[in-house]
Image (tube, rainbow, N blue to C red; front, top):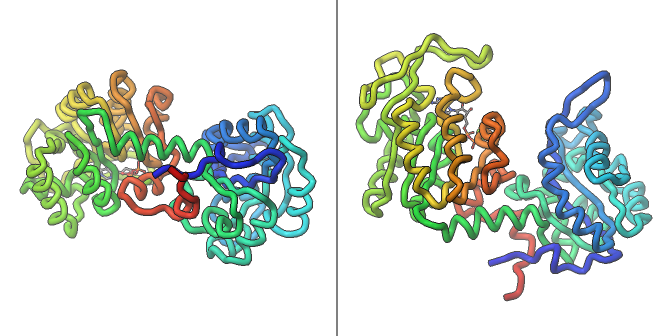
Length: 406
Ligand code: ADP
Ligand code: MG
């Protein structure tokens, strides 16, 4: 079911409140606060250019950080106005509150094509509480509401959900549309073979996605810490690798379901193992690779996939027509444990014949570190939101937008 899009809405000459996700990292240089990574800002440009070309009066709302309902100068959106102005080559007005008389005056005096950025919505406790009064105050700024903040769509906050109840004309932005096309349409009707590659920290975080994608995938390959719970379910020795004992039975269920559905289920055959990991110093004790099939000795833990596993995963990536990847293959924050993850990122970048889709905060960071993000078909902007969407959960930021009449 597709949602009403900004392209379906009457925006000409109207005040359009666009919820974007400008929750970007900042840095301080010579006393000035700058945007450290403007990816999220750049991703909203298509929606903004569309609205400018249609003569809309554009009002942008976003949260930044976790100010917890209080005004916190270090989490002001003002530096983002400066960066957005550079990117668009256009003046961006900024107002020091997102609701109230000052914001209303600024919104009501916009000319067609002009852009106003509001201050951090989370400076008000009403934002995260999804307070109806605060939602109404936001709604007073505009005639039309556009939600383009996919990464925040799994939260029912005032600017992502509540405000929609007070504005009749509403739709999703072009970034949100793209997310739904790739995570929704492409993955529900994938070109085959369809490979799902999962890793990361916890089975419990990802089990919903595993179950759901087991129904779609032809091949499921699991690495990262998650893999050890599955290996224990297969009765293998994993030393002191990270295992979630309360998930072992669920992992067995998944393995059985995969057999029943003839889904090929690949787990690591070899590992990079160490005795201790020091996260704060980003180092480990000296490590070594196990041989394929060799059990992990007592006192040692798996922190990356080994070369035989990389080869096996590369092989299935090489023949897949659709690949979805979420979750690093090892503790990629520590360079000695990053080889497996970076090799998988490279393999995805080389899979020219396949639609490649990557989601998850750390996975996207790994792509960037490998320098291959621009060679992936679609990199999702949603961390938690992408996973919840793939699990089949209803995202409040989407539910509040009407379906497009068929
Ligand atoms: P994403 O953000 O892409 O969804 P996750 O947050 O699920 O990914 O997982 C990333 C985390 O998993 C990283 O911090 C990484 O260090 C950790 N991780 C991956 N493999 C292992 C492992 N073998 N042992 C411990 N932690 C691991
Ligand atoms: Mg993460």
